[in-house]
Length: 144
Image 1: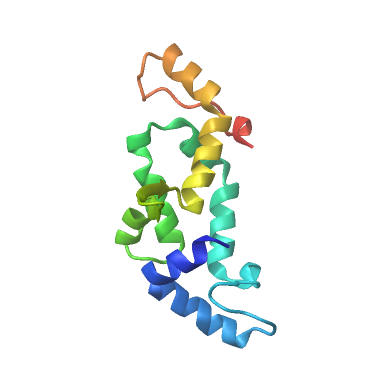
Image 2: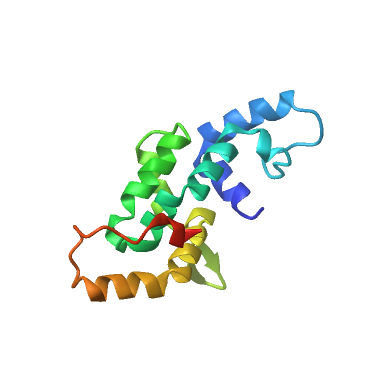
């Protein structure tokens, strides 16, 4: 997992919890090789968020500047402080051949996939309703 070394340096509190649990679990486990993720409550919480059709619709349909609600919800579900949501919003920066490059984190990649998958629905919705946001989004069944 390419995100593990980056997140280990930046989110030490979360990794301390993972390490403590990893020591009690049988089998091979290191912070850079989390093999027992389904056991961790954070993995279960993220799965619940990713499978929640209400949040999938929110991610697919809102404008970019309205995505902060989703990041705050994820931080809350992971029992992290509010400033963790700000960290989730930022892409990683890495040095690649003397140039800095922005790399989306795994959560941002998931968001990009959902938004790309439903781009046509989102575009048609905002064109039809002239940008008014009081009109309800399409039914959640469309965002499976």
